[in-house]
Picture 1 (cartoon, one colour):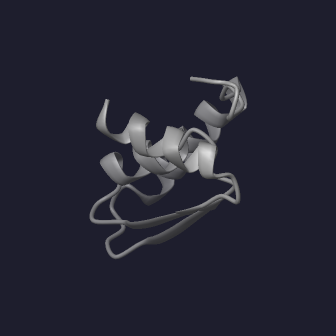
Picture 2 (cartoon, rainbow, N blue to C red; picture 1 turned 45 degrees about the vertical axis):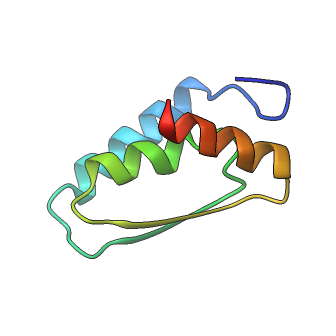
Length: 73
């Protein structure tokens, strides 16, 4: 990570796990992550949810750049 984004908290992992468990069999799910920061939430959700359409938004160009880099690392 870097100074442009916050370090994900333990509650973030719990939230993502809950969403995956609840919607694992859903198809065509639409997700929007407002204030995406590092991008860890949308990246994990898009990898674990069946063909989910995940959109991310952040006002910080630095945060968006961090999220893009995380996606490909």
